[in-house]
Image (cartoon, rainbow, N blue to C red):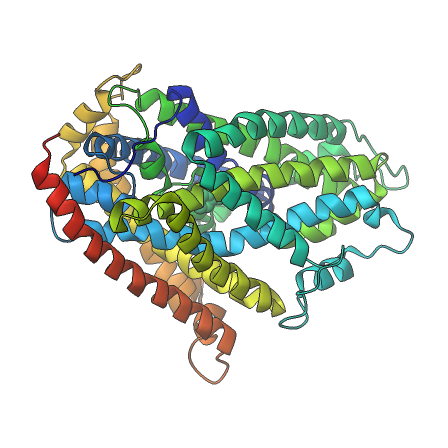
Length: 534
Ligand code: PFF
């Protein structure tokens, strides 16, 4: 009995491209600079690199290895892969997270992707360069911040048409499959976005002092604003900074999502995973720190000064920068390039959020491509439609992002390293990784994967719960301040917000449905696994 037609990357390079495409996204070019600016570059970067080494690299190698192990049995969804490898009744439910998380992230990520597309088209149309352009008012009405249902129009100043376009493009490429769809897009989009990034970077670094009346607002100070170490000792005592750094590593590298498990499952059994994993992660870091970290904040700083550098991701990308482009010489062209770059970065990431779902529906329920694409299309259209319609204050988007891109990812990541380091066993896992590897994993990573990474994840998650959920805002060595997180007060108590409650209900409903799907799928997989020996 065959589970499904096997697909594969055109080669090892195809897999690296696809994983790098997934990793390099909006996280690199807007989330990272916004976070680094918010927490004052120096201390944040230290926590970021520690998280990269302790969480990032171990999870990359674990997911690449698990995925390739799954391919030996012919499975591609996290649930199928973990079920086949571990053969225990609970493994498929861990794998189910690999579907729940990415499908929910897709629901809002595609909305932001549509903002990028809409902004690129508006830049071409010259909207940002009309006399009285007010970036805050434009974004407010484009995204419908003022009122639910306010952004459902289809004009140039509404997200509607762009959302449908972005959505359709994603599903067009997903329908074409891993090589002719995902790999094809990444092959062109990744080099293109690096070139765009470098052109913009050169422009930003040569901005000098655009306003001679404000000599302090020059590029060097702009870079210094982000990168000067500041008071690292005090900064590092702030638990929020550690949480932000760890979350950024997860989000940016696309780890703890199950995406890499799915992507690596299209490798051939002897394809290298060690060097490939490292290469894809390094490519992400170059784009994140080397391009994203050097262009956004300095550009905002030289035109708007320190007060203009807004910490929120959304504010930075869609309010601050459009305003910056109105001041910059050649700003219209650079706005087109910048939002074009963001759109390309976003689509290679959003495709990676869909493939795990396609894999699960096909190998779990036996659906053919057309049916799997239709079912996933309807599911994600409901999610994205929800985020699109309930646009007031971006409550739906922020609620789903908070609970999924923080809580569920931490849980999934912790379970994945525990599976790799303890259930499979770190020795067997590393031996598996070594097969076909063009580079050895240094011995030190054994104990890091087995002990340090899970403990570090546990500590971060503990901080997260007390800090962000219970709301004990504290700085080590400082006084304790208790302020319930708005993500909690939005759900319970007198200030509960119906949209936030509905967003959490959506997460729970999808989770319940997915648990049923993997339960049904496991029966099919068990028959297949007893009929075939790898
Ligand atoms: N890594 C992507 C970014 O930096 O924008 C975001 C992402 C991709 C999140 C894939 C989740 C995912 F499954």
